[in-house]
Length: 110
Image (cartoon, rainbow, N blue to C red; front, side, top):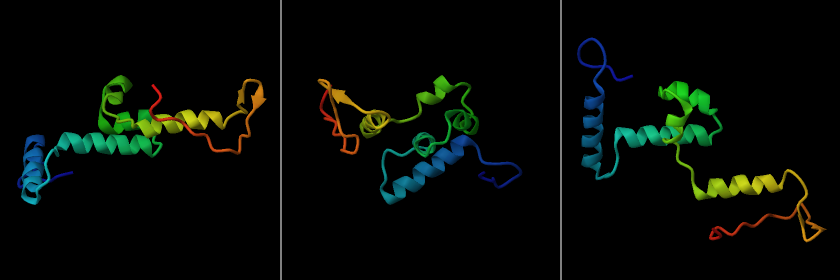
């Protein structure tokens, strides 16, 4: 992906060093090739690309290893829980709720 001056490609260390230098020049801190990798894998996951496909692309040996890379936000968890409510009618105290109503979830509830 990154051709070197001679035959072959630049090393991972060289790519990381170039990235750090470029970020430093423009005043971006906390960036690394590793953070780009994590972000790219999380974006693929959020886009609905199957974990097994992401595993192949990323070169992780197994899905457990990949899962450690993927970032999950509180909003994603709440959204997944809310989508379950749309699968079937919900009843509270024997009263069926209108499934066309929006489900509100308290984000501060433990």
